[in-house]
Image (cartoon, rainbow, N blue to C red):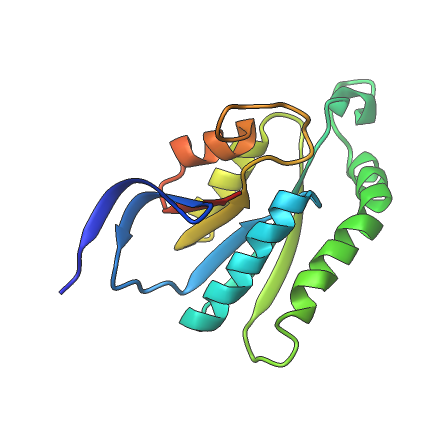
Length: 173
């Protein structure tokens, strides 16, 4: 017997939004990280659930470029070289975060992939779009990241993903 819930739950510092089947069949989990303490706590939950459900894990980092046009050519088009330059400056820190999460799954056969996306528009849109395209069963992210914005319960990215995702979302405090 399966029970379906369509709500937001707050359980021991974790909230879950979406249609959630209590007899879960989770095969693909997406964890979004930004290096913040909250995102790394969320990664702990992702690792635990991946082990429990023998699921695939995808680690996603979205690099938001407020100066997107500064990396563009004279026609306003972001060039591959400009994107490569931005990625190179961020890649070392991001790779440490990816490696930290991967190390927790080193003694398993669980498939782990990582992805960096550069966005000049919307971090939320990139996360939701990636999850839809890759047919993720669950998105896990921290409540507040490194943006510095203070929201009452959720950070702006977490709130946006909760509101726009077509799959369940777990938000970790």
